[in-house]
Amino acid sequence: MGVSEILVSVDREIALLKQVRALLSGTAAAATTRKAGRPRKAAAAVVPTAEVPAKKATRRKKKRVLTPEGRKRIAEAVKRRWEAQRKAVASKQAK
Image (cartoon, rainbow, N blue to C red):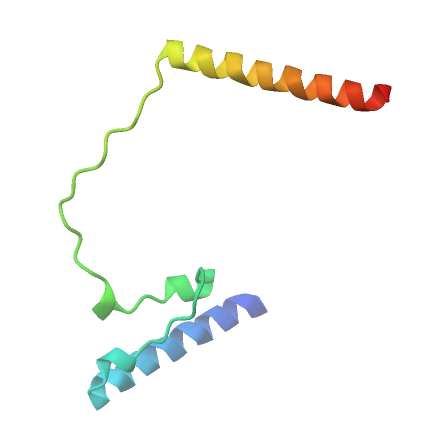
């Protein structure tokens, strides 16, 4: 077991103990404090079970599909853009 795995394990234990202490003292809201930004892998693995909401039966949005005509229009627009960029570079180099 590497050092990073041990640290992750210790962090999990600390989070669990903090959660248990908060439940016993009656301050469940103060059990976890979250920092701004995306959580790290170790922090993401420690999700208190009391805060996990029940999954609702929600409908998934239909995946949008591009028609062949739309795909062709996009390809042509990209080609025109590339051509304009090439001309701009060529005119800069000619100066």
